[in-house]
Every structure is written in structure tokens, then in C-alpha cells.
Length: 461
Image (cartoon, rainbow, N blue to C red):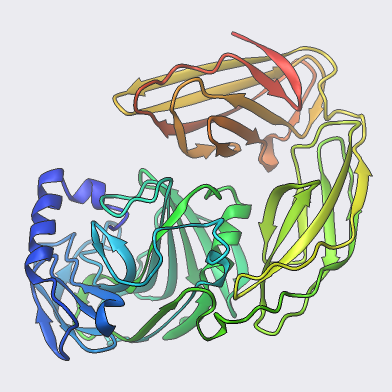
């Protein structure tokens, strides 16, 4: 289930891969099981994990030696261009990959499940002195609780190390400090969102809470809380060579692992305060919480509505209406999935200037459609100046947004919200702003007919 699977594997090849996998899937693996089949797989740790050869991108033979705790690539002679896709992704995983599921993972799991915040994973690896590769986690999310086929929500990659000139899908969008390291954040789309965290100083081992990276993706609008996590995989993408790459140990635990019995909630965040109040947004900050197993993140509420999550102690709320009163609070989460009491409540009233278009607004929705997919370009015009905008509308069909440009787009059911990005947040009087997105549909791709700009109804056409 690699991000290039739709390009590299036709339905026939996927079916053949499934047959090959079925032919070698066994019970608990003996030490030193040898697998050279293209999609050969077996289980370890009594079925808790699956090890897969997954030579999906190359016809050169690749072989792995499966141990009781991981695997080693014993034959890998890949020679793929470094500006293209890798040759393979040999990996060990918990969860489901093309209908081959490990036992006891509780996956697929909706990310709003209380257990999700406590999912912990670790890996230790060995790198050879030659070859071109990345060493990475590959964690998958889907809008449904699917166990087979290609996930279409998001792919989270955590790159511990890489050599040569290879780089993730898309482009670098930020640098963050998470999970004890500094990471360059890359975003792209391969028919689904691909978010890669590339460690600026390589490491051969890591232990982290999945929600640490998920919350950062969520804050950037790349994932949705209605989605499901389907698998947690750790392995290698070799472009050149590959022999000697090894996963020494891999672990995956639900509910914080050894902390799974923890029932102590974090302390409540304190001293919640607001600043930089505008007509459409506000900046919030608070003092952090303490916890016996460690705080993994904070949930920000507007009244009783969750508006965002963060791993830090500040958050910028956008998309508010002008001249409107709001109240906010914050709760902390720990690695065992416990949630704190709410912080103090802070109340603000947004300003009147610019955030709500005093005159008319007009929206033009133009789409290009094909079987099962479409792109849409939207132009937003306002008779009065707007400083920070949020456009809301509802799909009349069963469309799902998969990626967007020039706006941060989120979707809940059929309701869609698009918020400006930094470079197009201001619309001058009688001016316009534009953005677009790509999506999928099944039975209907009817265009939306009503839009609101910062809460004010717009005309269309």
C-alpha cells in the first residue's frame, strides 16, 4: 500500500499480489524465514505483526530474512532513478495491508477513538554503508474503515534517515520540533495527501506517539478527524542497492502500551489568554499541563465545538464572524488516552472591520469532471474589503475533497469550509480571491448552489 500503488499496480497486478501473499502467509514465523516472492509476507510475534517483502516498484529480485523481531534485506540490487519512485518497501507492520491484517492491532481505528491518543510505536534499524534509500514509517489513513485496497485519505511518512538525492513527494512547507527531533515537513498529493516528516539529523531508532504527528497534520488541514488509521508500517524505500537494510525491532501498542492501565488524567491547562483579536480570528495561549505518562497534545474548543488540536501551548483560531462574541477553552491529552478537565474559559468579541463583507459577495464555481473524480476552481468576489475570509458551502452530491491549493479546505460530511492562506487573506473592495481543489465522487457530482463568505450569503454565477 505505497503511495505510488495506483500508478504501479493495476487491478490485475494487485489481485496477483494478493494471491502471492496468500501463498506464503503462515502462522507464527520461525526465525530466519526467507522470502523472495514479490509480495511475499509472513507473521511474527504470534501474528501481532506482518513482515512483507513488497517489491512493488521493480522487477529486480529482492529477498528478505525474517527474524522473530524484524527482518534484513539479504538481496537487493535496485537501480532506480533518484528523481522517481523507489524500487520497493520491505516493511513490518501492524494493521491491514491489502486485506492482510495482523492480530490484536484494533485497526482500522477512527482517530476520534479515545484509544488513538495512546497509540505508541518504536523501531530500531541498521543501515548499510552503501546504497540509496530512505528509512521510514508509512502510516495510512482512510475516510472509511477499509482493510483492503488503496487508502485514499492520507499517508504519513516519518523519515528517520535517507541517502543520495532522494526526497519525499511534493515540496517542503515547514520545519517543526516533534518527538524529540527537528523535522522538515513536506506535502504533496498522489491521489491522496502525502505528508512526510524528514528528520534533519538522522537516527537509527525512535519511539513516538502517532498522535504527535497526526495532530500536526490536522492543524495544517491535511487530515480529517472523521478518518480511520488503517496501518502502522516501518521499513525502507531503496532506490539503489538495498542489501543490508534491517529492522532489528518493531513495536506497536494501543492505549500507551505499558501505560495502558493508566487512569490518571493530565492536569488542566491554566492561564488561557487571548490576543490579536481581529474580525475573523484570535490567538490563544496557555500554560502547559503535567501528567505521569506525558502530555501528547491539546484540544481547543469554541464553546462545546472542537476547533483544532496542537502539540504546543498556543493556537490561532480563524474563520470567525465579525462583531461576534465567542468563548474558548482547552483540554490536555496524555499518552494513555486520558483527557484533562477544561482550562479556564476566555471570552472575546471579534472586531467589526473588514472580516464580514458589508456589501454583496459573489462566488463562481467552475469544475472539470471525469468518472469518479473532478477538480473545481472557485473565485470569491466582495464589494467591500475583506481581511481574512472563510467560505462555506455544502455539496449536494457525495463528493469528497482530497487535496486543495490556495486555501485550507476541510470537510465534515457534505459540509465544506475553505479558509484563506497567508498570501490571499485580503480581498480589496470589488476584488477577488481564488482557490481550487480536487475530489472524488460516486453517484453524484452536482455543483453546490449556495455559499457564505464569513457568514454572509453570496450570489453565484
